[in-house]
Amino acid sequence: MTKVRPFSVTLWLAATLAFGLAFTLQAAEMEVYQHVDGTKYFALEVSPEELPSAEAPRNVVVLVNTSAAQTGEYRIRSMDVLKNFLAKLPGDVRVNVLAVDLKAAPMTQGFVAAGSAELEAGLKKLEGRVPLGACDLEAGLKAVVEAVGNTADGASLVYIGDGLSRANLLPLPKIAELADTLASKKISVNSFAIGPRLDLPLLASLAELTGGSVFVDEEVPADALAGQIASATQAGVVWPQSAQWNDAVAEVYPQRLPPLRTDRENIIVGKLSAAGPVELTAVTADGKNIAIKLD
Image (cartoon, rainbow, N blue to C red; front, top):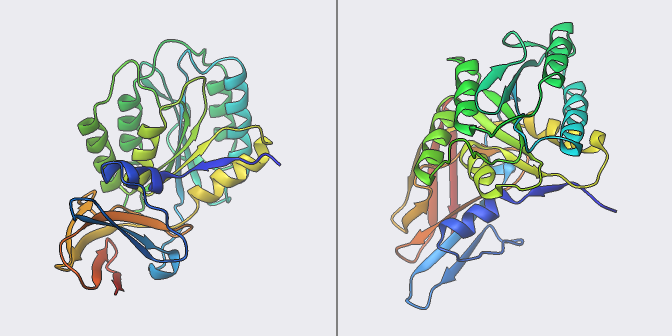
């Protein structure tokens, strides 16, 4: 049976950031790899059971790529998945729909109730938008940050598109800067990657650094795919405000402990400086403690 494939964000990023060293986590909570030069790298698995509770987001922003590449069968599929996704959201969720190509444009009048006439009007406006031009993903993400504003609750972002930003190419420092801004607003990026060409590394980076997920389009019913995306957007995310490692750890990648999801394992990679147990202590944005020790 063909299934939708959630892209393995954490494992992809772990391998990339650790200079190409691939880790395979099985039952163990930590794996260690020793390079030929003697340097030891680790991959630490943090399970949901080791995290404090986190409330499901009540704000959802949808950012739809309406560039020329998102036309024909891709446009039909995107709209089908989007409508099914919105239908699965709880009634107390607020939704804000934006479109982006060369510029970002609001489709709804700010946040509106799930299932409301205002949301339906926003979808009709989106359907009437002709796919043209290239996409400036930075403009879209900045529009999302502006839409969320200064609410302490943050939001789940659902991006629908290919991840390409042909109108404004994004170097790695810019991607990191955008991810930092999103994370500072507690906005987790969940992407439905669809299109003739995909930039999965970019989407994976945004997801990993903001506590999100990536789903790659495959031949499955829109209803089933939408259900998985809806579940991802409604999972709690733990936002570490500060973190400290013991002396056994020389470096971690990235340096700042990323947001941690409560619906799957989270993988942190780094370099060891000495033998002995690895210890992590952290405090979340809402004052909860995380303490992990591995011998």
